Image 1 (cartoon, rainbow, N blue to C red):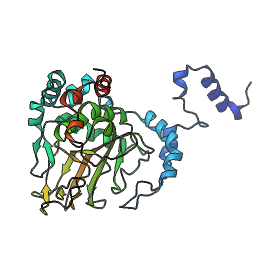
Image 2: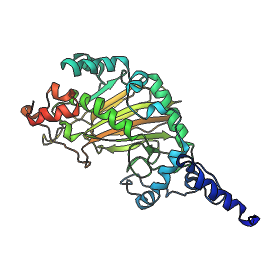
Image 3: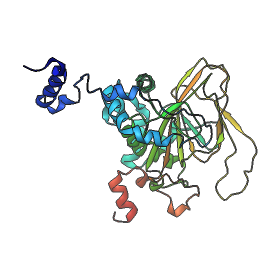
Image 4: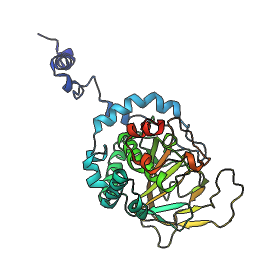
Length: 343
């Protein structure tokens, strides 16, 4: 017989040896705790800085990243349809008007309907749309973020200024929504940005997305000082706005000044308010600030576009070097051949 003192260990070992490979990762024994259990016990470094805090605790996050990735896999997803941009995602989460307008641009290089969906926000150089995401996207995305946030797995501050929120694209300490956000950026956000700001970039300048969510509420961050984003273009989507006082503005933009053009011609600053489900799109170098929240809660999904190295181009392109409509909307392989002159 087997000594009772070692019976539990023997049983665990035998089950692991003879279990199918796909079962091994789910076995729970007193001597082998799950990655989720171990990740929940981690104590992440606190986020203190409100300026240049992006490297705060970076060694800790890099050290524990493999464990946290396994923990997120074990924890699972609430809305699996959010994690990949496919026909189901487009049907559930993207406005039908947007999908139709993009299809027209891809098919016959006609951007007329698309441009109608992005109206001037009242702030020069900032576009607003009510027709990007569906209400279901807002509902599912906020539920997913709440679900992930309740896991107990540490997640990292979103950027060097905001302390509350989470990184969504690939980075140590992030939540795993990278695939969807990269696909969404390349198929929708990037070509739309080039449609609205054709002089500001070409595809090679904006082929990578950095996505995150920020939260403002009493007792946490309630505002954000004036800054420029680490991006060529920024998409800002309002996901949640609860108990915010009527008439309270959300953002303030400084006058836009193109690189090399000297001081802005106007000193007028513009405030803007946008509601749950609305999207703003602007140049990342257009300086702005999040106005102090007086009451309630505000949560935003933000996507920064830059190149693969994180380089932010600031100079405009001359007319002859700008991307034409056909190239803007061509699939990647076709676009590369158009740019190289093969087609």
